[in-house]
Length: 52
Image (tube, rainbow, N blue to C red):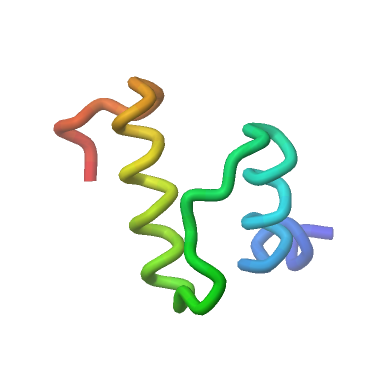
């Protein structure tokens, strides 16, 4: 089960389902998708802007 929770595709689908958002582009690499989600979280005030 832990392996499933850490799977990048599972994480992306979970974030998309929980937020009803998808700030990534269809051809994003994993790193680009992570950056897009972090940027979105900061813009929404969900992540402290000083966090990396």
